[in-house]
Length: 198
Ligand SMILES: CC(C)(COP(=O)(O)OP(=O)(O)OC[C@H]1O[C@@H](n2cnc3c(N)ncnc32)[C@H](O)[C@@H]1OP(=O)(O)O)[C@@H](O)C(=O)NCCC(=O)NCCS
Image (tube, rainbow, N blue to C red):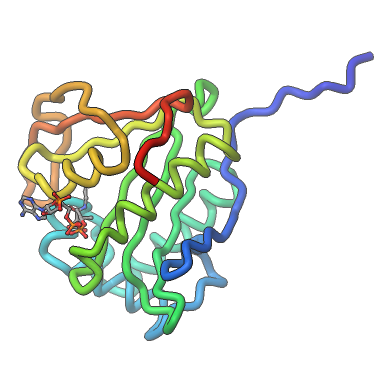
């Protein structure tokens, strides 16, 4: 009898140390200066984040519910939500995350946001590249997609800098925080795409 077992793509909790950035799983053990719940609630209240990543977590009860959901996602291997931290003081800088859209097929989607004070210095590019590689190398991802509103050019630059070529435009595909459906750019990387740049 064969002892081989069928495994499915899965996210296993990990800490990714990028030197001046630390990526840690969101969950009950996450230590953040000022508190994880308060920091997430503050992020969700930021106008740019509430527009492009409508978290609806601007009060502590909602923020706690998101942290619980992300922790449950790590436990089941279905979500990989990493807090991006400044290792010097454990300040929350942002989030970079993967989730399966078709787990059996190894198809995942990546997303991210940064608090205003952390923007403009490439932190999200490095974090997104790191979790993308991790998703391909450890989780069994075959293809990782990245979608952003056409009206969000900063995110388009992040996608390009992370090596996700633009594949097309999705029409009125997602309802953002302003309550309107926006067109989105679909970018994607395959596990077989070569890494360039870094
Ligand atoms: C999108 C986001 C993660 C980008 O992070 P960032 O640190 O601000 O990125 P950078 O400042 O390094 O800018 C990335 C690029 O976009 C450009 N850019 C930034 N703001 C821009 C704007 N308003 N219009 C056009 N280009 C812009 C920068 O010049 C840079 O281009 P470069 O690579 O040629 O230098 C961050 O702005 C953010 O969290 N925004 C709010 C939430 C959000 O949009 N999340 C993504 C949802 S898909």
